[in-house]
Length: 269
Image 1: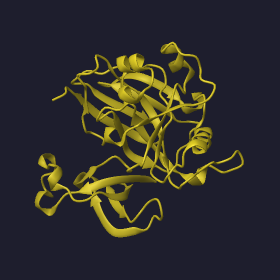
Image 2: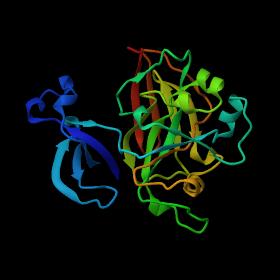
Image 3: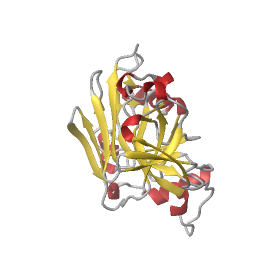
Image 4: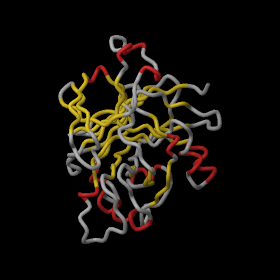
C-alpha cells in the first residue's frame, strides 16, 4: 500500500494545476494511491478508514508523506561509504538529528547555501514509525512499530561537516531533507536497493543487505535513547558514491518497490 500526504486543489484552479500556487491548495490530508487516484484516509497511523473522497493523482500536490516530530539519521552505515570518507566502520550506530525546517516535498527545489562550497547528495532508505516505541528489547517485534518506508536525500554541506566534526550545521540547512514521494507499507528489504541519479546518471547503488546495522536493529537501538513517535523518521544511511550538486541539477533517489524522489537544485536567492 502506498500512503501519501497531499493537498487537493481548490475548485477555482481545478483545471489549471500547472499554474497553481501554494494558496490554491487546501489543507494537508492523508491518502492511499490506487492506480491513478488518491483516496483520502482519516488517519493512517490509527486506522485505514476511508472518508469516501478521492481525486485523480494529477489533481493533487504531493507533500512530504508524513509530518515527523523528529528525523533521526544514521551515519556511516555502509562500509564502503565509511571508507570513501576515510573513516573506520563504527562499532555502534552513529546517529544525529536533522531539523524539521529542512523538510521539503518531492519536486520542490534543494536550495544551495552560500555558506558551503560543496553540497552533496546522499540517497537513503527512510523508515517511518507507525506506532510509539520506547526501549524495545531483543525479544520485541519491531514490525508493528513500522508504518512503512520511503526515499530520503540527506543533503549535506560536506566542507562544513569536515570543519565542524559534528553534523548539525552541515545537515541542517533549509531544504536539506527532501523525502517521499509516498510511504510504501510493504517492502522486501532483502531484495531491494537504493540508487541515486544526478541528471539521469547513476551515482550510487547498494542493496539494503549491505547495511552494517539493519533496520530492525536500528529501531531497537534508537528506541533505547529516545521515544519514537508515530510519524518519526529514521534515515538509515547512504552508500558509497557521494558527490557534489550544482544549480541546474536534477537529483533522483530511487528505492526498489517504492519509487523515485525527484528534486531540482537551485542557487540561493
